[in-house]
Image (tube, rainbow, N blue to C red):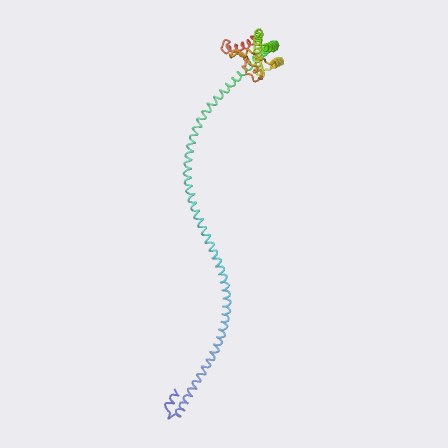
Length: 376
């Protein structure tokens, strides 16, 4: 502003300058005083600012150190939280997978529960039906038990009756068995005497018969030799022919008697040993001796060579055929024999009944057979 005034007023330049300088000086002094005051205040403010700056620097350093510590603490916490978060996320995944399994199991369990409830309902219905059916059966069985008990009483009564009847029948049977055994022993002795008599008669008759057969066989041999000579001489002798015919007829007669006798002896032997199982014979050795003697005669008869008979060649009718010796080749046990049972006559039986007549006729026929042979 002073510089402008100086330029605009060049005539009064010095005066104006002095005036201006004085005023300026005053202004400067005032300004200087103000500036000093301001400088002091600024110095005070500066000191205060520096003090604040130092305080701020201290606070800043403290803040920075706190920040560093906090940052490290936060980073550690962040790491821990990151690890925990990863673990929790992993646990979350596991729990989600397990939750899915649990949900599946829960769904299946609910389905099974529904099925079990349905089955229970069906079972209850079936059980009610079964209980009703069993109740009906129980009623039927109760009625059956009542009828069975009534039948059991009847059966027990019948059993008592049968037991008493059996006791009576057993005692009666025992009495009859004792009576039968006594009569059987008596008739057994008679049967043994009869067998000994027959066998003795057969032994006596068979001895001469076997001698007669030997004589006839020897005569036939001699006659055969004479026929051979006559055939060589071309001569037919009627005396030799008639003699041969008579000898052959005698041989056939003797042979028939021998075979018949041996057959009868075999029958007697079979019946004797069949009865021996039930009876004890007193004269059994004598019977065995007679059987042995007749068996020896039979062996002698079988040892004699049977001659060739001309009469057998000429006769063709079945009635004239003589019995063959093959019957004698069979053993005693193989011969068919009609048993003559020794059956005692019951006391209560009618002696004129048909059964008794049949038994007596069989006994009489058995006795007449050897007697007819003895008469022959």
